[in-house]
Length: 235
Ligand SMILES: [Zn+2]
Image (cartoon, rainbow, N blue to C red; front, top):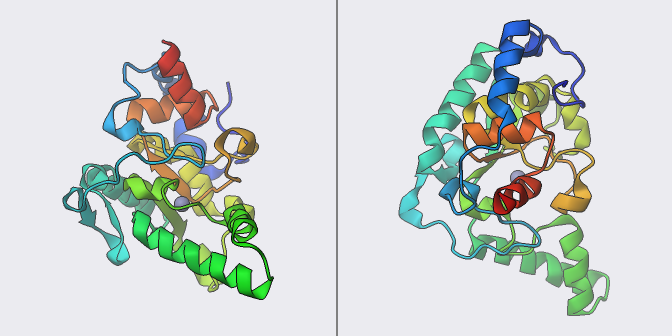
């Protein structure tokens, strides 16, 4: 089995996927469904179809780079990820992490009001339109404190407007994350071509912490987090 398709054989993958012993180890350890439960804290499912039941509490959060907050239980893996990237010559920048339901609500409502006045839409129509590009408050994985949006400095330097789209996947940082984030328990949460399942378009910069074993399994099997949770429930 090959590793994830979108990244061409890049130099960053040499140590993990091009030396035979490493590859065998990775694949055999990722073959069996991990002994984890969908009720584990790191496996909470929040998506456009699954509203968050309970927002992460403020004392569970820790402030990291740039004033962003994450669940303190993922601080160590996050810092290890950043350090490993740095070793590989990639300076990661955290551009978004925890977002509260109330913050998302005010951003969302502002957008809805704009659409209603500028385009003369009804409230319902404006909400629908807003939801094409934004997540409805309560349905964003960023409410969990387990999701991070990360890009590399090189990309930032050449894109001061910070408008992210699929083309980011061609960047060194994105390729490195696709191959390596799993080693620290993170997955690329919204993979290319899986929009019908995740309900969110490909976002090579959005990572989600799920734990190392689960991350290795999900990435090795090219499945989404939704499919993984389904497999666990059917176990
Ligand atoms: Zn995100």
